[in-house]
Image (cartoon, rainbow, N blue to C red):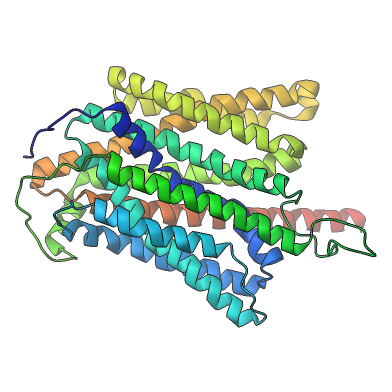
Length: 435
């Protein structure tokens, strides 16, 4: 079926593949957490233009994510199939990310919209080439399932570390410039020679410095994948040259494990993203511990990083299916139940310790979901290759990425709809009580 490994993978190869997971994790989480504040309060884009910007980027990047997989699959150069995509998408992605946080000297609202539309859409579209090629590299770096599982372990851990790193970079940069996240338009920084808060220019500088750090990490980690991870060539002859092979699409639709994996991935992503979106709101407004939100989330993510390496060992002993049930039933469900049941009236001063314990416990389950669904994806791809003699890993990962993006959008829309509905319902109740 394929050639055997020339050499077993070393720690350096695993580390470099893990580092390659940081760029997209760091950049997308920085955008998710901070870009809305930047675009509305610092760049002064209107909410209507921000809606156009966000919607256009999501639609075009989702379409690109689907088609890039087919383009990557047809690539075959003397330097490999995937590494050229990783290399030549790293630099334009990093450049677009930097200019995404740059405030041009444009006064016209339409001019600002065009600027951010170019770089936001450009970043999301170009970075799909990096993501698909990097994810697919695990299938070409080794033909041994255990080595692939180790690669995925490092990748999953570093992707979660990228989430933590994005927050630390942003928080650290703003602390360095003595600025707050979010510009106060009532304070211009100077009033009769007295400082009354950070000026908008200070906010701009802080965002640009944070973007420069993220850009540098993007380039370094992308190059780590190119020069630190081997790409084994498949000895089988390529069976198609079309960038949209109909035969492969038909085979995918008929492949039951692939369809089941799509369903599993969709529901897991929907549940996890919905919880992540609402966790900060829950802690801030329900538990009234807004000053502890960062530490709770940090503990949650840090425990997930550590747990991933433990779950890799557990998977080898009891298998994928048992591990995923263990992670859901023993860790995630109790974590969710604790967040729903815990109240200050019930626990009193013990509320905060319980929240921290629940965060660590839930992080262990989160790490389980990260690694199990990733290793199950490689199993599905191997099963498809054995049954059809077609190796189209990039198409698989492109479709998985497309589904993930759709679930992210659904989770965000569903959460906003619920918040809007509940807010309106409470408002009506208050009016009735007041009347």
